[in-house]
Length: 459
Image (cartoon, rainbow, N blue to C red; front, side, top):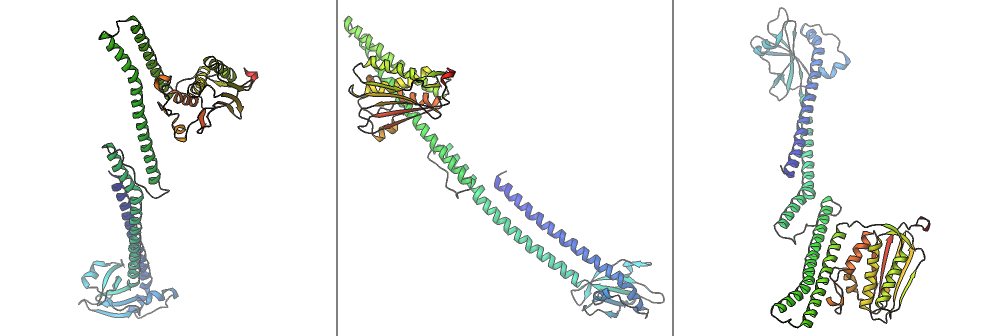
């Protein structure tokens, strides 16, 4: 059953329950008022008997209101009703026949019953009495005009209240439909459209502060992130395919050349095998980088241990000086830069940043490596004084396979995955990496690793 149907049934049940309750209240009140008239009628019976027997007694003070509605008369055998007492608040007479009187008369007593009035809409509550030495029946009655009027007013009030409740229920239903059910129906239609292939479909906007608005915004954000992730995945697959296609093309070319007899000379064959081996190594490096990124994305378990990061920085600087002995490489690290980290992966991160600086800046550009402690962690900075990057290149520097510098060819040693791997390793440590650069100002990579910093005494 649809939510709209359940809501309509629920609100309808409330309206019916209110109407039934109002009717029961009105009916109960009418029964109570009728019983009160019966009590007044029983109290009026001695007075009526006295009037009929010509021995009227005193009237109690609280019976004045009842006397104004009292009717006393004699019903003859021929259905003739002779009036003895007509209350000043009454306008007609009760419609009683001998046949009706015989049905309701009882030996020694009589139960009140209701009859209509003659020549008026007024109803009466009647008692039948008999007297010795008298033919016919004595009629004692009280008008129900005020009782019926009270009952009618109560029914009208209940009806008006029911209409008001129905109107409020309809307003609530319309409000709920507008803010609750309709958005769900529209969201379902949008979700079905997306499932059918309309990937650009989005949820409509709804009044701010409502659950529908929050759900629509969250759903649209999820769709946007999914589209961005899909686009990144497509780009990643395209870039990976392109990166792997290049060495495969070279290897296939040398293989075809060999089959065609173009490598009979031993020197050319050795050079071809060397080139094939180099392309295979580069392809293996790309595959290893991709596997590492995949493992990091899946939550690669790192081997954390207390270590002195200053030693890691010193090892990286020593390796870099061997690669380019003519470049000025400066290390400025605190003596005991102790923290908890994966030594191998941290060395890989710093070495990748230094390697980028060595490859993409001139030898005359100095490189600075800085290590220091800050509140709650350790900060490592790798600074080169090269050409720097513009804002667009800096924003995409950590993307996978991105090469912002056209001079960075595939044969210069980079796969375009180095900074992506660096970012993943730093984030796996719970840290963050940032790039500060500008054209002509060089690049400064800042790595912040979280604490707590390991004290020297605990090493």
